[in-house]
Image (tube, rainbow, N blue to C red):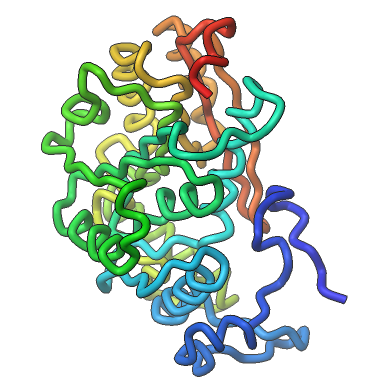
Length: 308
């Protein structure tokens, strides 16, 4: 009897342990990285970037029919189950305005910092049929994201890409005067410096391997803009909140992941300052990692049904 990963969202397709025979049939190279651990459970070494990437390729192909997904070496390789959770919790947020989950391209989402992996738009469209716009400041990341779309031409009508030319802005240069988005989403840079990012990854590598490694292996990879920014997570999300007030009538729900619980007090205080009409924190847990989604809106509740 397999043990369900009950901490994941109830609609998450990855609640059950990985069926590696099934995944290897999708990506045969994955078999070289699968082993049976001390608990007699097939697994991979999650501190190896190549193993994680091959696992992602298999998961995206098997569950979401994404062909030829790939990212350049050194780019962030996202854990698919956790990324899927964010999508499902956004769906729950939109369901508050309707009796059932709104699906199809009438739901238009904005993914801030989509990266070379394009994972949130891929999961959002395959899970619920939503239309998505992925943005990034890194041109090379967007070029790789476009290659993924080129390998999956059925996605092109539903997923577009746009470069943010100014790293000091999040919504400006992206949202046009007539644009309306049902939601925005973001997995912000967590660290405040490259040194901090490397130290954090060293802790993660030690936890995965239970080792005393002194070398920081970026097992999930990550470019500078993906992992750190000046002021870290708090500064980035604060900038997002301040800027969101200028686009208050063009996005129904602004959302962002918050890794550090201690940051919530300052962020919610800032939401009150910019006069958000409603905001909420939704806890998300993947295994031992606990994260949370912060969501806020400037739209009166009586007007929200029209957006979904």
